[in-house]
Image 1 (cartoon, one colour):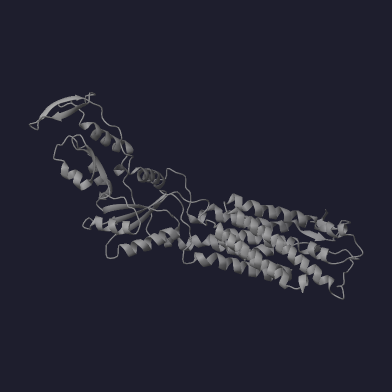
Image 2 (cartoon, one colour; image 1 turned 135 degrees about the vertical axis):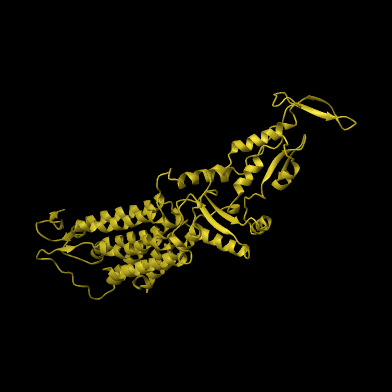
Amino acid sequence: MGFRSFIFPLAVSLFCSLLVFFLFRIFPPSIEAPGPHPVGDAWALITLPMEEDETLVLGRLEGAGLEALSLSSQTILLDDYGTLVELPLDLYLGRLNAGDPRDTGYAQRLESFFQNDEGRSLYVPLEDPSQRGLLDFQRRVEHLLEGIPYGLNFLSLVLAHPLDPAWEPFLFPLLLALSLGAGLCISRSRGSSVFSLPLLFSFYPLGLGALVLGALCSCILELLRLPAEELIQENRFMSLAERLRPFRLNALLALLIFLVCLVYPIIFQLPLVPVWGGLFFFLLVQAAVFLHQTQRLSSLSRRPFVPVIMVPQEERTFFLFPQVIPFMGAALVVLALPLFSRDLIPGPGTPVLDSSTIIGEAEYRAHGEHQISFSYRPLGNGDSSEYRTYFLGEDGLIAGSHPSSPRSDLPPFPLETLMAFLLEYKEQSIGEEPFQGGPFFDPVPWMGFLIILGTGIFDLLRPVLGGPGKGILHIKGIPW
């Protein structure tokens, strides 16, 4: 049957669709794009009653691979009379008596941060601040802490994805399929457009980007519809240049829209290999469809009648706005979802933070340097700059001393990431930072919607064949 059979373009379309599908498996997109969120931009705050065993909760979380920062997990530096040791908080307090000169008050600062009137606080860093990540974390905590009363809040510097994970795996494929199906019903060349549906549907891993690319490619098909028909048909009364002259605007807009398709994944940080590969395969499928239609027409024993226009008439060369209506509707659904899914994010997400309890690195270093230098200070001379090492005699008493220098190998501040996050979070919560908006004001979906709408606005050019005057193509009555 060769090129004349519809199986040829269908096979090419299915084969290219499978290739694009596997490319997306190799180079998966990040729907929470642009880019991954660094660890430390979101934390889970678990609150326990004072009577609950904190070590039991820590053991369950650590057994599930969740590292929590809590009072029990903190170690404090202590000078053990010449030996610097790190002790858990309870052991640290047990080593000190009232009035011990080694006590700097740092342990009490830790207690006031991790314990308050509401209970004990545990902070767990989140790798995925999207709503899927938040809900997955909530389910894991519910399973791990079953039977233990607790409270859960989320602190985040980034916007959560507005979709419910129960919908997300199916929402975009469903919207894309409905948009492509509606676009096929509206299309004025269903016979050739149907072969592009499998390939355009293979873009579904892009989420909203699949709707944008689907709308743009549908517009390209509409722009090339009449020029392709003119190339396929045989017309002995006009040269090829004369026949294609009315469609110069179609070709220009098709090229412009295709360039937008190429630039779109760069701007929105989508995987370039599957997107550009899919666009190349889109052109390959259209070439296969054109070859199929050309061979099929040449095999007919009777050629279709080609009328010669004797009386000027008007005929538009493309209809873009009807093509983008289904995709605009699907994009509006995506934009409206945050209005109905804000309550799906677990926890209030904005607990009140007491900035006076936040511990700075300077406090940690002051405590650590005090412990490092404590055994090198001369007795009775306060904070003298002279450091000495004391040694014991045979009777177990101090027998003498000699000059020495304190060690300076202070470990890094263990709460540095958490405290830096809380300071930035506190600034945003009191309104010192400019308003960034909620998920409904996320600019990425809105920009995708505007791209689709802007493509349909090209219909305002009103390109027509024939019409008044001597020109073949008229835009709003002006020869072009």
